[in-house]
Length: 141
Image 1: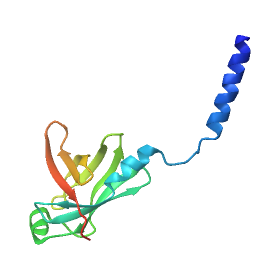
Image 2: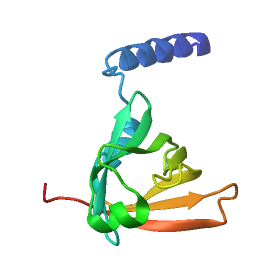
Image 3: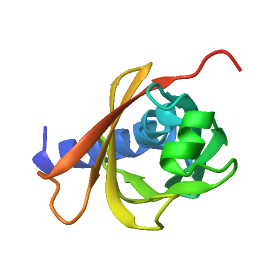
Image 4: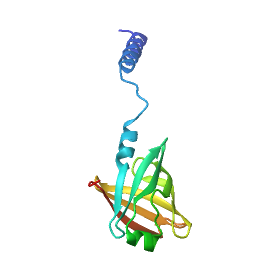
């Protein structure tokens, strides 16, 4: 059999195979990235934040405020505290955390330990000089 004939048949077969695969706008990475969506509780403050998506970015707003969170952190319901996070395939990076009490802005990175545990690393300038907070998925709404 002629080599060029084999190439033509393989090319045609490849074209047919790929033309029947479903084409969607959402990739599996989008689905993986969206696993952080929902309400997350800061155990030490008793307050919670809702993580949501707008376009290809992720944001966090305060949804429940405990007296401790209000007094110590300056939390206010519906206040935006995290913005512009993007998913890099493993974690949500490049975002900004806004301290509700002072207005200071910090870098923030989120990583998921498991489906119920999220770690927020907050840093100013250098990621290796960060403070970590553990959030747990809030299930009782």
